[in-house]
Image (cartoon, rainbow, N blue to C red):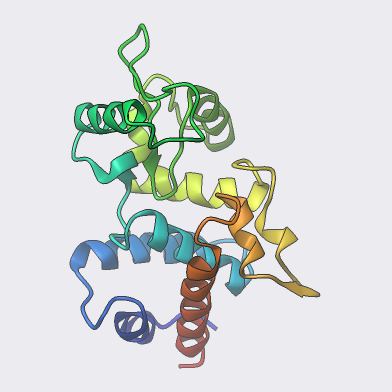
Length: 206
């Protein structure tokens, strides 16, 4: 059964967006739903967890964002430099966001943060979209959605993929956070995922 969009939006408006859905949020949700329901069918739990991941990583804007949520690359670089100087990026040894000899920054961008040149190169190959010449394309919605789906379905981000956590014999909402970022906010994102799945199932029953 298709996902009845009105039913889906009515459900998530209450359960995940505090009773109000802005147009940008609807646009982002629609882009992800479209990718997940057109062509080969995917497990509804996969779709729900990708929605949950985008929800968390974008601060529930459901729009591609830069690392630090800055409005420009320059501002993001400045904020990251400041945090690095203050010792607030404990796990970071190399300031990957600083512009290279070509003036490009490989800071995090998208619905899920794509960082480091090597990962932009990898996603260029996997998506067929040139993110090396123009890394800022990771901020385009269609590109960001492609990166989200391909990265989480194939394990391109961390070596972990959706099929390892959601299958016929397994459902691990908390462990699935390892696809993106270890155990960081794993329970929170798991809760989002369950809410999105409930909305999807309700909308399919319409």
